[in-house]
Image 1 (tube, rainbow, N blue to C red):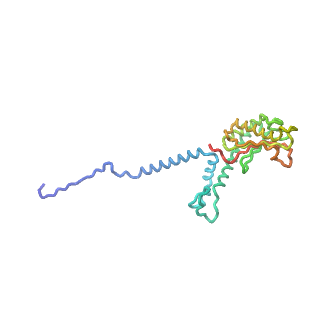
Image 2 (tube, rainbow, N blue to C red):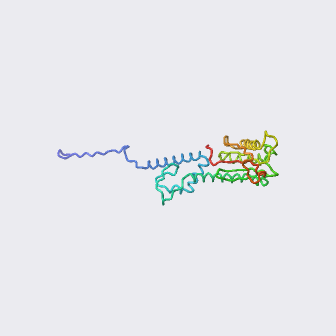
Length: 259
């Protein structure tokens, strides 16, 4: 190399660990967070009452109620937002009530199917009435002039009555809704004694049903009331001595007991 020639020095920088890795990790992280959120939502739903589960299922079947507002909530107390076409949108409350009614309708059908399997059901089906009303699911065990669910003039359950109450208890125990028991009599005087009458008899029969149902499947604390009405709530007011006024009513309310 001559003295007058310029020396050119080339520097090469090593990348080391400071190279660009791309955004693939962000996609993987987003997938992980999404899966984790879905997992917690599923775990939350599993722990909810049947009423809440039915309400959530009802939303996915008919989410239209959530499409009538913009920028507002549909829960009670939320802002209304902008309404479409000037029509007031339905609130979530009627949907919740509709879902609760659907749960009780399904429970009533399951109960009818379970009772139909009893060998003696053909002789009893006209004395067992299952209806869903605004107050809840009502099951009534009705007496006739020839047939009763109790020993005559007492609160002693007959064997077939115990069998029926066992099936009802098992079905209602899985449902988990609060239960109230009512005893009713006709207007015929129980006896000449003033120490024990239709008030005592109706209450004792309701209590006898309570003890059997708690033994055969109802949850602890599921029964919230035991009432004896004597002849103050006749089924056939025009015929106060009709045997069908003598009955046990089992009322399953709409609201579920939390698990």
